[in-house]
Image (cartoon, rainbow, N blue to C red):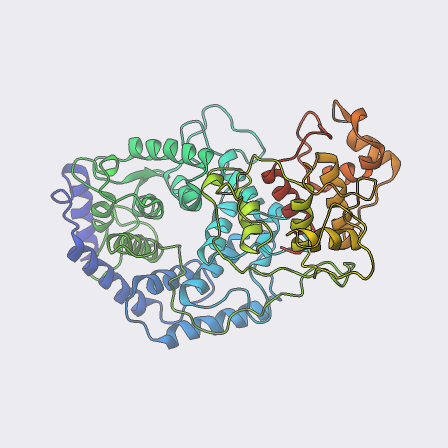
Length: 551
C-alpha cells in the first residue's frame, strides 16, 4: 500500500500539480494535523532525549493543542531529569544544539529548562565560542531556544567569550552567502568564498532565528534578500530540491520561517503554479497520518513525519492568529519555575552593591527601534536604571548631565541612597533637587567627585573621560579588577590617534574601559573631552554591569 502510494505521488510530482490552488483550507489543515498528532502518540509512546522520537515530537504535540495527557509530558520531563543527572548536566561536549533542542521541548511542554535535576540548561548557551563551534546551526538554535521563553543569557563562568543575543545575530548575518541564503559551512573559517551555494533548509532556519529582530535594518535587509532567494528557488509544486532530491523537510523549514516572520503561507511570492508550501507538504502525507521524506518514499519517515507535523502546526497556529511555533509564552505551565538568582554578582563586590531586578519587562522607546544599542537601553529601562527624557522618548543622541549619570550609576549598582551627617560637600547640589541624594551617594562611595571650589556642576555635560572614570570606579565597587600596569595602559591607549589628549587622571580608567569592552575599541579616536550621548552612557553601564555579573 505504501509503495503504491509513493509511486502515485512520484507520478503526481512529475506530471501534474498536487491539487487545485489553495486546496489546503482550514478544515483540510486541521484534519492533517489531527491525523499526524494521532500517529505521533501511537509511534512515540515514550519520548526520549533524542532528535527523533523525542524533542520534536514533544514540540509538535505541545504546540498543536491536540489533547495529550499531562502524564505524557511528565514522563518526558522525568526522562530528561534522569538523563541530565546521569551526564552531570553536560548534554554534549561540542554539539550545543543538544541543549537548544531540549530547552525548546521543555519550554513547549511548560517546564522551566533552568531547573532540571539541579542544572540550568541555558548556561551552556552563554558560551559563545562553544556554541558556534559546530557551525551555523549553533547560533541559530541557541537564539531560537533562548527567545522561546525570553530567557536571559546567563553568565557562563567557563566561557572565553560571553554570549549575547547581539553576538549570535551578528554571527548569523556574517555567514549569509551572496545569493541570499545560508548553508552549513560557509563562513566557518571566517571567509565566504565566491560560488558558495545556499541551502533552503538552513536558510529557513536562519530566518526563524532572525524573525524577532526585524526592526533592525541589517536583519531586515538580510531577511528580504533571503526571502527573494527562497522564492526563486521554489519549484512548480511549491516545494524544494535539496541534498539531491525533492523532500518534505526543506518545505517545512521555509514554511516555519514564514510563520515566524508573520508572512502568510499563501503569500504570492511562495505560491508556484497554484501550489503553496502547505499544499506541497500535505502531498507527502500518507493515510496513517505519517509523512514521506521524498516523493519516491525513501528516507526516514519518522524524522520527516515529526518535521512535517510541527511545520503544519506552525501554519495552523498562524491561520488561527496564535503565537508562532517558537514564541512559547502561551505554553501551559507545568512544574516549578527555576529558583531566583537575585544574589548574583562577583564575590569581591562591595556588600552595598545589589542586583537590580526587572520591574518593567518589555519597556522600550520609539526612538531606539532599529539601533544597535537598543538591547542595552531596554535592559536598563526594564530595571528602572534609565528613564525616558522629558522631551519624549529616550532621545539616545542627546548629551547627559553629570547629575543624570550619577543617578544611573547609583541605580545600576542597586545602592541605597545615603543620608550624611553634617554639611554636604557640594554647594551647588541642594536639598530639594531631584538628584540631591544620587549625587551625594555617588560621592560617598567614591564614584563621582567634585570639580573644585566645593562644586559638582550637576547640570554640566559629562565628557567621555569623565564617564570612563566614574564607570571604572563603579566597576571596582562591583568587584571587577580595574588595575592595569603602566605598560598595559600605554599599549591600550596608543592604538588611538588622539591618545595624547587624554588627561593624566583619566588614562587608567579609559584603558580599563577599552580593555573590558565597556567602550568600543574599534573607533579611530577617543575624543576624551567630547560629550557622551545618552545611548553611549547606557551602553557603558550595561557592559559594566554585564561584566560584573549584575545583569
